[in-house]
Image (cartoon, rainbow, N blue to C red; front, top):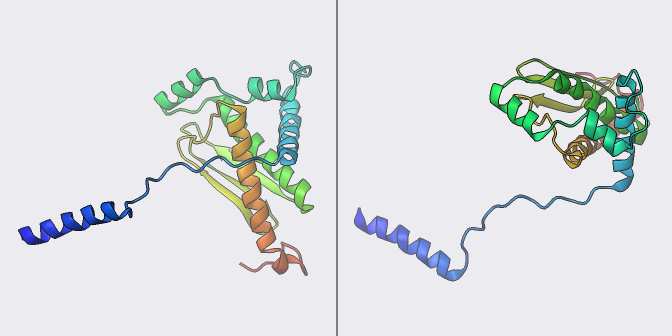
Length: 188
């Protein structure tokens, strides 16, 4: 038994000496965002936020200030929601707005009719769908409100554009199947 244990140790030492040690995994570097897509997404999100601003209180703000005041949560709010495992009413309103903005950007880029539906309960569990006809382009399950609430504009934009890219790639993948009869003709 001891000889086997020693052989394993010798193999490990030999691989380290030969330079074949296991690489440490690290987070991938954040990729550069397409500024055109960022502008489209911010414009769509601000238009949707303007529709919820019934009295025009935030009409004079810049798009970044609108997103910050009307959409983002402070770090204290995030800690509070993590602590009680409850989602604030503000976050429950943010979820559908974000996915409507995602659907709008995808619609603008693809030319196809794209809808979204999203809901989240008081405990933070829910689901968001972005679809075109019978094709589900983006499906996100929300667990304990994650990734909501967002605390920075960069995180909102990165999450939104990741969903847009995922949906457009999926729509492009099935373009051949839907070319003749449209996306409503796909059989289950």
